[in-house]
Image (cartoon, rainbow over all chains, first blue to last red; front, top):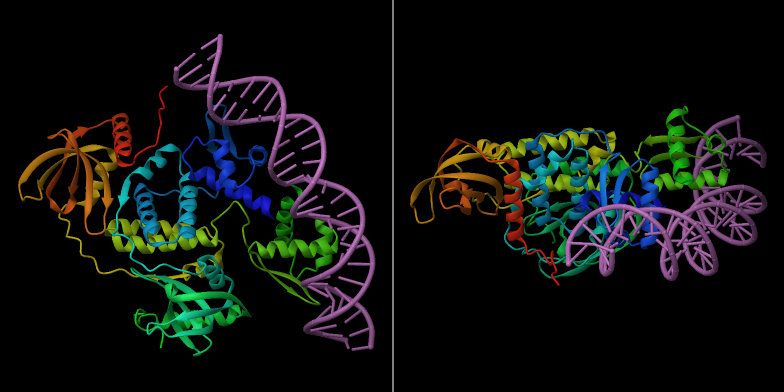
Amino acid sequence: MARTDRLMRLMDTLRRLPQPVTAARLAEESGVSLRQLYRDIATLRAGGALIDGAAGVGYTLTEDKALPPQSFSRLEIEALMLAQSGLEQIGDATLIEAGRNAMARIVATLPDGQARQAMHTVLRSWRQKDVRPPVRVDLDLLREACWQEFSLSITYRDLQDRVSTREIWPLGMSYAEDTLLLLAHCRLRMDYRHFHVSRIEAMTRGPESFRPKRVSLLREYVAGRRQSRPGSSSGS
Amino acid sequence: MARTDRLMRLMDTLRRLPQPVTAARLAEESGVSLRQLYRDIATLRAGGALIDGAAGVGYTLTEDKALPPQSFSRLEIEALMLAQSGLEQIGDATLIEAGRNAMARIVATLPDGQARQAMHTVLRSWRQKDVRPPVRVDLDLLREACWQEFSLSITYRDLQDRVSTREIWPLGMSYAEDTLLLLAHCRLRMDYRHFHVSRIEAMTRGPESFRPKRVSLLREYVAGRRQSRPGSSSGS
DNA sequence: TTTGCTCCTGCCGGAAAGTGTCAGCAGGGG
DNA sequence: CCCCTGCTGACACTTTCCGGCAGGAGCAAA
């Protein structure tokens, strides 16, 4: 159902972008024609969202029919903002976008504009330039595999530069300072391994779908042994 | 939109009727053909709802999904979790605590099992150990000053080790990789300055309270000189 | 006022999705 | 074997969605 999904993303975009925002901009973000954008706006309004549209200016999201009003203290807001700021340094594009949407949604539920000022409290968060090696594979596919629990076939170059093709059950990702790690159960070695995502040269979706029951057991097992440092244990 | 509405009602029906429920019954409730009912079930499942279907028995709603507007998507939860994980590396104790509180509150609003599973998606976020110099002053007071917009009297040791006492208007904090900075308007120099918080030797609350209006102007000014804004005024 | 920008609406035609009917397969329990 | 039920594919029909075009109206700056 593409339409409903697009309408949701349109709401997210309205929360995220600085207001007022023109219909042309929203149409571009939605990947839809200007005419259709106006229709989508009308649909949202019919659904209860209060979107103020002023000719010559743009749209302003007046009121949100959003989630249950969660009240956060100013300190909590600041913490969330700083966290998002940090996320923008270590996350990938998809995750950053999701974080911004989440933040915008949280802010939208706050009592009136005074909370929006909170967004300006944390000015910036620097970090030395990203030295992490580039990732060649599709992170979205990888994330999807972790979540929906289907196996992956990967071509992996280990730390000794030996290339192998394995089938793995992806369990979760670990974001380290200088590298992005993937915890998975390697069907080849029949053991849990950390893979450097940057060293995965190719990745295709496998047919196998490991079962939720099995996965929860695996996760508990992993949680029990998670004290070990992962950086040097991959490969071999 | 009729279809989306029907899907909502189907979820409601699933919650309402004693389980298991046969597809024929659901089709009758929805006022739709059996074939279409199966399609609708597939749509709900694709959207994230966990509906268990057993041949000869019927449907059982395992887990709710809180369709479009409410709550956060799985990706957004993952982003928030990673952000919090990053926050724990760069923030101070007060902020970390606040962040955990906020996260707990957000997670509490999520449909049960989904939240727990989501928290395990991001396994960990490492970072090299903190090398930032220690902060002598009360960060909470500093934060409060930024927020409530009252002036501060600080004893500052600059990079040339010269000690001076100044009155400042604190505007916001910047979290850098190796140091914590305070952006403020220095009443002594009458200019905007970055202070290293670790070099502030003493700090007391000043009497002055600069006005919100003035502050917003200052913030705009700061924002204007921080990032180059392309052509806001194109004169003819 | 004029100019420029923008929101907003109606209409048309092609494209896409939704829907019902029919058929068949799979799996569990008598 | 049977019946019950979930599940999927194929086909045709209907609905809606969507882009492009044209025009009207409101706001702001020149």
